[in-house]
Image 1 (spheres, helix red, strand yellow):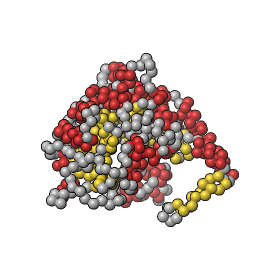
Image 2 (spheres, helix red, strand yellow):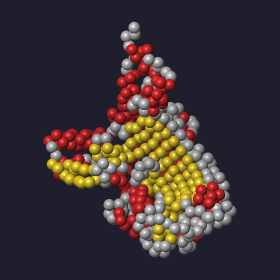
Image 3 (cartoon, one colour):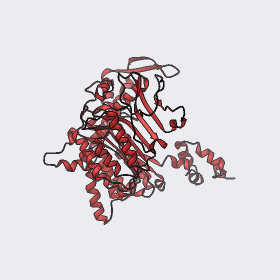
Length: 521
């Protein structure tokens, strides 16, 4: 008789696959330790599912774990890597300890809050919070004292171990206020400059490691999925010097040329990174252009410009200069998808960028601030721009417009050719159709809010035959009267505030002044 009853079980086949597909990671690890047969059988798609995505906060323990996994044969299964730039915030724990009370929330069976009350903490709770506070301070001190070059070297070795397998690198940022809890930058209340500095440090280390490793990574995302976090403009181009020196050493091109998808959140006009008096401003403005030009084979570009000083209704010169330089000096012959957010520009500059990329099939423009020196009506300016875009992009399949501003006023993206209809106060998505042509509903979709006796559309999605006509696009003027409050409008206000409100406004001006800043009343 076999000494190990598990050894007689089949190690392959549908029943075994079903068992493995429903086990969690801890169970799979325990099962692998039973015998060699099971250890080999558990290297299953379910097990590699837990391996293919790894996250590190660049701390010593996290990097050691990542290095161990990458050096193992299973490390070849890692497909994506997330670099998390974290700031450890002790203020929340310190406030609770100072108060000596903890908040308890009572909810009903549906999860709704019935009552909030404070009670004094027990001794063991105070001890646990003191341990939590010490842990947060130690982690922050560890990250402050970490050597950036050592981090870059460790990441370089990790990437080389994963060469040919890794498909994506993503940089994100967050604030840790309790162990195991990561808050977004917007809701944490932490000083934003500290988060940006930590994010910039992680960016430098990652880009240095990626370029020096020579590893090809098709997709690179830099804080695009982290609200209110960006790389300061003056620091964007720092890896360019490293890339050029590495290319010269290899006597070839930089490995960034193989990046196919690039997403970048770019910060402009920050106090800490203003150009020094002796530093020419042109070299700083060209930073975004330089890093994008290292990726000539891009098929997808996602660029967000985030402002860290108030702009009011005027366009900040530095922000518009950045995009102007980029529009004149970047040409990506393979570009198919493009998303621009937070860009300040005039019509000529925007169209210069678009006409240099006639291969675009999917174009998204969000929070675009246009200025018109001729004083034309707002709706005619938007109509002219959309008409020019459609004519310049013969392969265009989808065009998304959202929050387009003209001289500081929110444009109405309601197509003039389509008729009126009744509205419901809770409507958010709006796809009206002609009675005689119901297919119009499949060609455009709008999102907006009621205003006066009409409707103000702030987001418009065009596709299908709406983009194939030869005629000019015309949009309705902004309806007269105040915006009528609704759930759709409130949700949109909160979203725009969270994503685009400049930092010097946040915390100084009340959030309910969104209407004053965005001029939608």
